[in-house]
Length: 282
Image (cartoon, rainbow, N blue to C red; front, side):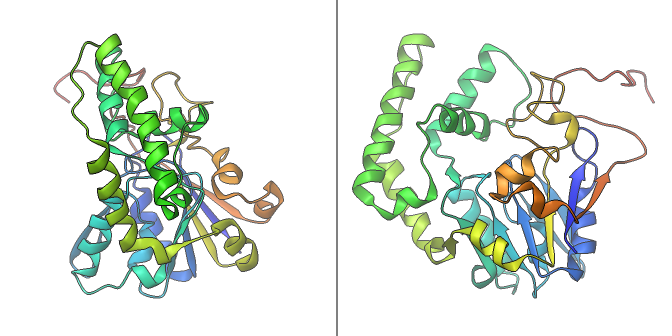
């Protein structure tokens, strides 16, 4: 039977610890929405791990980790995360699959994130997640599969850099210092580290069918559609994100178990309504 772990509040409920505990009994663990704005901290055998992009279950040596199509992936951070874990003696790259349809987070997304946050503060992590999704839905996004064709990748990056540069200079009256060669070369270098992990993850999961744990990020109240909009994350962090984020039909989850993780006292990070907030010394 498959299992879905979701945050039932505004995130920080302890999903990572729950996934780390339960994933020991599963063959595959899947991240399917969000990006490096997630932060799952777990301690295994006295060793502390902080994961932003990798599924938490990959810390079990028998488990396959999947980064599905609904995620936005910062390759720079992903490669660093992989190398940090592998330096502790746990292999990762031969147990990791990355969707060829996942979108990339590139340096100009972070520049745009900073500018947008300055204009109207919502408490973003400034990791470029919102702008990556924004350009995805504007049909100007760049996917992992685009890295396989250097000329096409260069052309796509050039188009986006020119767009963001215009915003910086003509709307926000800010300097823009990113160089296309640096962005392209660094991205291709990082891609070389993980290119053999790239597959059609939807097909892989359809064929696997059972023994899969789906690891949600953020929390239901931060869902871009049903959360406390506009003080939300940029993806569907509730159960709504499952089908679109994995590429699997809704029927695939009809027999799955769903666990919502919450904690005894609610907290939230960033801006937005928080009706039960305590503002005294307590």
